Image (cartoon, rainbow, N blue to C red):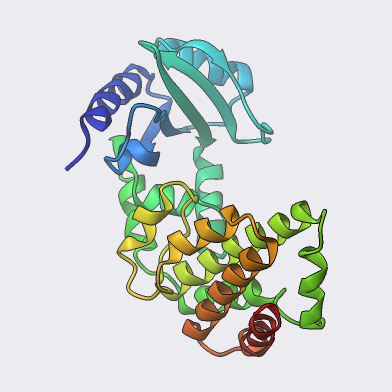
Length: 275
């Protein structure tokens, strides 16, 4: 059941969608509001598909038509995609504008393996104005290609091997906390990439991780908790051991492949070394 906050923000989002002119052909509510889990600090994320490309100033004008205030933009503005943020009744909104042709190209790129949380956002999106585009996307996203899963798993396992496991000891030396956190953060993302691919799930953002992985059928024990334990453990060696054990448990769940098979051996040696 959606939270009360989700219902409130969805109603505001619908007002924005209804205020757009006919040149806006598709409006998709995404993020925590679309999934019904918004809380008091959640903002509203929306994909706005237009019939033709926009300049940033034109995107601002559409946002103004929808009565958004305090307009600004963030990130790199693409040649086609534009990003505008603002407020409606004091609530924060983030609008991403895609022209129709670009939207189709971007979607095909996602199906082809482009690594982005956009696939998950669309899979869980809610149509606020539609020509049937979102329904078509969601139907196609129900199939997670086996070859894409295999490629993502192999790519994720790539760094775990190829150099002596004793190299792990260089990042638990005093004064190497940044290098340690960099390695573990990257390792955590790769663990999640493998787990989502094994389960045939489009990779989401890392927000609300415990809830995201709870329903997955195939995953290491205490997945989210162990990531938190590793990243917050003050003892460097123990922190790295926790992460390395999680990595090992993860590749043991993955199908065999050159990188995965090598990682199983290498990570096992790393665990023994750190113990």
